[in-house]
Image (cartoon, rainbow, N blue to C red; front, side, top):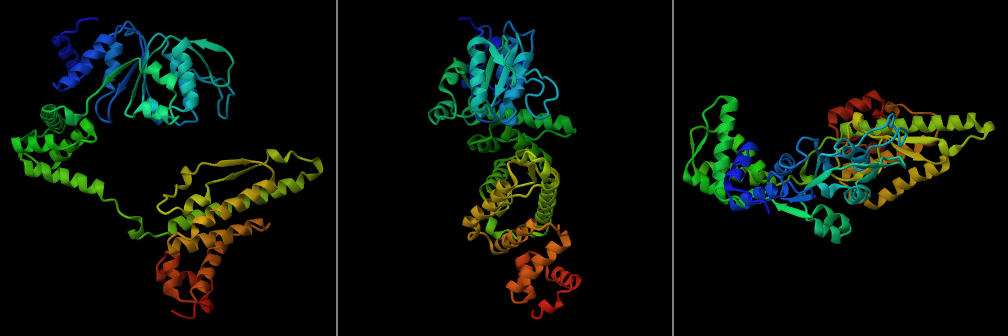
Length: 449
């Protein structure tokens, strides 16, 4: 085993701006230096915000691969449907929008090092592909049968217990033992003792230099408060706190000041606002719902016209696609944030028209199980949506104004013409309701207040 001196450890920590003198931290850096020249996979464990990302760089820069590529990949930030393509590449035409061939990270990083951060978020398909690379250096691009070779060292990191995931069937056991040949444990901040003082002073000084201010100072009572805190977000959370305090405080900070900021942090995190107490205006949601219904009406009408026009040619009905901008059943859940119109992703139902319409009706029927538990205004809104959605069978496409008028009429009748109750159910003001009643000529229905 190579002998690593304290001087070498300090030089590496200074080079990568790692601050601290806790034995567990020094041991982790020393372990990374020892294993760096040995071409073997490494797994780095540690909580979020502990600085796991420094260790793969230390390993790469002190290995024979240091003059070749180093690529860091956050597996948790890549959609599950494209992770295999990003890691291993794809061929032209392998899937929709694959207009050209694409070399994945493992192909680009040949003879170098690849850092897989949040490796626990890999899909099972990507895990199988990764296992093959680790065992034989072979991989297949998505959509290709040609075996390719790569020589890559893998350093992975996670904040999750992979063995627990293995037992739950969420992570492959054979892959676990491959990537965890060597493990490095990065200690949480709460176990690093006086390192908290050093980090607090460093963050305060950095903030002062960046914004041309006097650095914040801490007395012993302030340090005691900082060291007694649990720091679930670790170094990143401490840095956030120091930045906040540096923005509003100056000079010497005592324990009471630190305690106040920590209490505010805990209070805001521990007391979420209950959904039932939120006063929400559903006007924007209704506008989006109406637009969705109108789009479905138009698309179904176009589909019917296409079928009628091509009936003599016996078209392949299975090729007709109905694009629904969003699942209306998702709108029934309390607290569900509605997407903006530009963010709605189309879902394609590739089937015959009869099956498509049956599925559309089934979605509404399945949603009735949860409907009784909805808040009153939202529950009635769902009734309005269902009643309006049935109209999509008609050949005539209604306008947004027609749909809105029918919703208002239905609400007025349910509330026996009482304007205040009708406005509350619709989630609008009485003034707005009165204006809509006059606009649509519904005064005869609104004979009581």
